[in-house]
Amino acid sequence: MFDWLANLPLSSRAKYAAGLAVEEMATNIVKYGYDDDNEHLIHVTIDITRDHIIIEFVDDGHAFDPTKQPAPDIEKLVHSQKAGGLGIELVRRISEKMMYQRDDNLNRLTLHIRRLEPDDTQYIKLSQLAQETP
Image: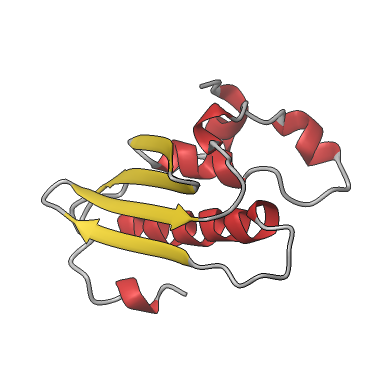
């Protein structure tokens, strides 16, 4: 999954964040956006600018705005037997900007992830997920 990022001049954190964002959002589109057996396409565009990795997803699934989803109850998820529930929140936290619009029956989600320098050592602490509320 992360092979396409391997040779890009990005920090390992930026590479991980971009790969995670693509994996999580594409999974959500497939899992929740389609309830039929028709063929569907998800168009993913990745642009690397001086300051950001910009990832755009365009799909023809049901209208769904992940920017409007409430933050999950982390404590409840930890004690639950149910897997999942953190994907959108993780992507929201690793993205500097997350924008959604619905155009002509298409979902368009754009993420701006900071492009960090190769020696950058920033990381997301799991404790931050439990303490912060967007």
